[in-house]
View 1 (cartoon, one colour):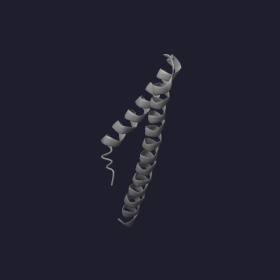
View 2 (cartoon, one colour):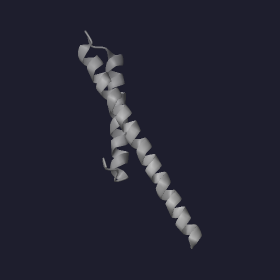
View 3 (cartoon, one colour):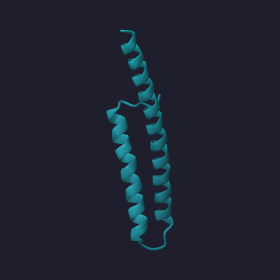
Length: 76
């Protein structure tokens, strides 16, 4: 019985650890996305590379957002 209690604590600790990593990654991808939007806004002409970079950053952020929603990860 004692062994399973330790396993539960370790599992809870690992979940907390990965949740924090997910939060940090979400913040990072959000900043990348905002930066890509700014670059796109100030680009003189239509540039496919700029558009693609913004789309990739946006998709990455929303993928992580969906993952956080599945994990019931709040802002806490």
